Image (cartoon, rainbow, N blue to C red; front, side, top):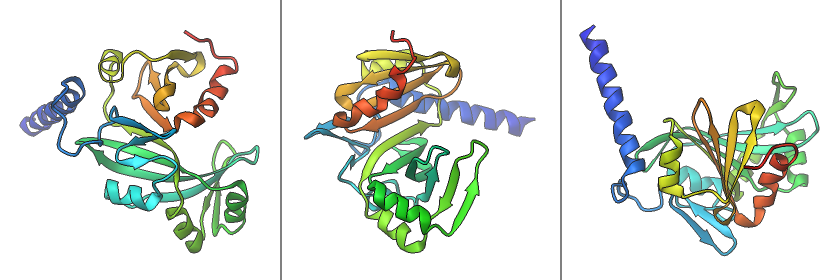
Length: 223
């Protein structure tokens, strides 16, 4: 009983510390550029977490995060192919999170990697998950990052997001998902704010922001 109480208090204290990092400007841990709101526009692209989208590679990300990514290829039932690098235990600026990178590879390269895959598993949605051949794993680690998705392990209130990011330029609602997308085109940032659940941050180069909001425009009301 006492042990359970101690663990509960400890977890609560850690949560408050992490929220304090979000709420109190000037109290970030050491290591500039490692917090999710520290976004630097650079020549039409974005630098976040010490990584420049479109320039920094997966190998650079693994060095910054200090963890080896799980690399997989996903082919949708419609035939669309993406190559993802997944970090399950990333800690950036003292905040624990999951991070997913989409790698910038041409359609021809992605298709060739799909056909060279050494293992294929079909997921419930019909999407195929492919384990890449070793030489393609190495090629992916030299490829630049197209987009970065950041999933913090703490739930953040809208008031805290406004304190750190300001008011979004637009809000687009996805009623079926109980989600409102907060859009910051100048930063290349889309924050998916869930009514119940944790927020999802997607970073792309501002020049590529149109492809992020295009699916949201189709049938989703703007607020």
